[in-house]
Image (cartoon, rainbow over all chains, first blue to last red; front, side):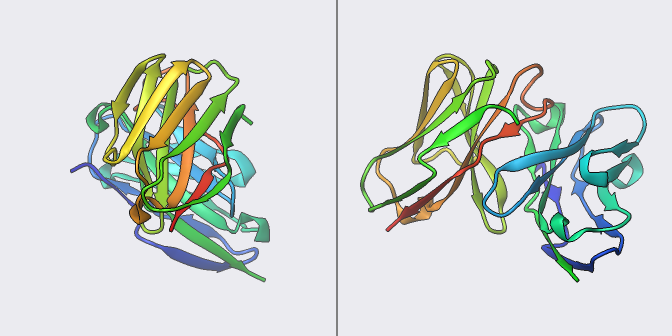
Length: 114
Length: 115
């Protein structure tokens, strides 16, 4: 079955440190890839998306993600984390192989320590 | 922010009672979705709509029904609520592309507790 895997349920990083959140999808020749962020008690906000072209995409709040087809991955990165980045992050995948919907990962909770 | 509101934002109900959640959009987007969010499961699609009176099931549709009589409103009904339906429910919309490729925009969520 098609799936999206976020291997890390929780990640804790120090403020100012770099961050990488992992996302792997099961298959798809031309995946449509998304990262969303959810602050406590809020809905999901789109950080960035990849449809085609340059495999390194820039998003809001200083985030970027890199699509690696050979690894079926779309990892999210930020060079220097701020305390306000503490939230839950969701990867989502769509495309022809995923039927009429987006498939979401289970999420990664980011904690930032000062 | 996309113009999406959900009502109520919080609800506590008892097992066996009917519950209706409402999603309202001001963006005139074609597609609307209902998800539930549970720890360890991310977001799971319940139902979606691709136009007025046009709806289809998602992966966790059992126990839920939906209706869309106007472009701007998408209702989710639990005919007889059960404790397993305690969750946070999110509405989402998308407009230009297909539901498996287009960006979705989310409402603020409804926290439902079934006692």
